[in-house]
Length: 419
Image 1 (cartoon, rainbow, N blue to C red):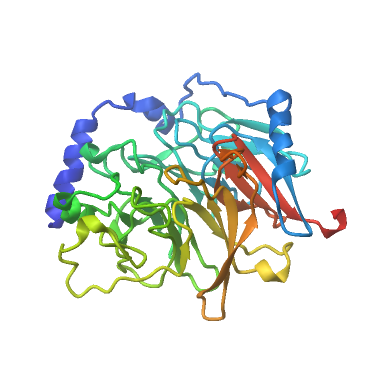
Image 2: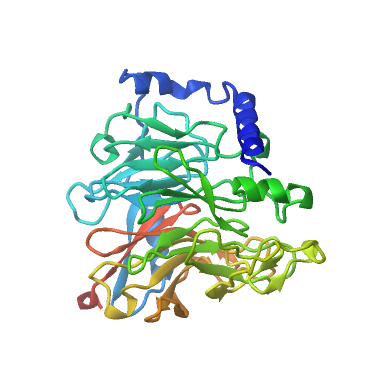
């Protein structure tokens, strides 16, 4: 497919989108005009908070660590900690982005309220910051930029710029209710990396060429002004977690595997990408498991699939991940990866709902994975107490774990004196 055809697809999608989001006050905001919008505040005390605190007795963390409730946050998904630590933003799979504020620095949120309530968001799952303080929010089919969001989050009408207009991230006819939770990161090169999960269990063969050209089922890279779009990663089913290794700049990301093939296959994936354009196998393979739908379909000519660094247990739903670069955890964890397993939905015996840790060796490869925190799954009943979704770190080095099922953000800190 030529670039001209690709542009035509995206422009056609834009025309189809029309007034789908009814401008959502964007014209006013871009002209620095007020909209009259007001915030929705979430209570941080009362019965809901106490019910969440009751879950803590079931959560297991390594010796010397402690877990607490950081904030009550409905539907909390991917997180972005502001560069100066003023606020944490949490996206959702609904229509809210939440601002979480700890004003007295006691490591418990004082306030939680919606960010930019004057804007109609559509699955704003993916917030991410640039090092110089620009907040990007990747939605189902749009990307926005909020300059100085860390210092203007308290007003309902923040300054906003459009990075990718509505209907131009993917063609509108490819919008789906499935696999539409985007994540984003600003890389060492200053460019924006956005995952585009393909919407099927396994995409139809007739869509393969188009998806490959657009980057659906991959990770795209663009300049922060929306120009220079390219497909950086190919062969992804649906990644909802990515981070750059601060030691060498490699991009790591999780991937979710095909459903309906059994309890133990295919494995989940934690991948390391060392160069632009690498292909990670899907839809032909998940890890080393051959996907039945694509047996006999010719593979890309001259392309060698990159195998995952870690094969996780099948259907644990590996989502958000982050490298640990803080100073408060023991040396064992420094430079390693913490990742969240959301938990299975189509497995005979549920699995997951835990935080994993993967150590790296001197060459930057995975050197072993273990359970770091669990207990959100009640194994006696198969019910979930919570479902970890993403991992982030505060400036003191403690860990935040978002949980869209419980509607909470948990904090895990190293405090051996408390044991």
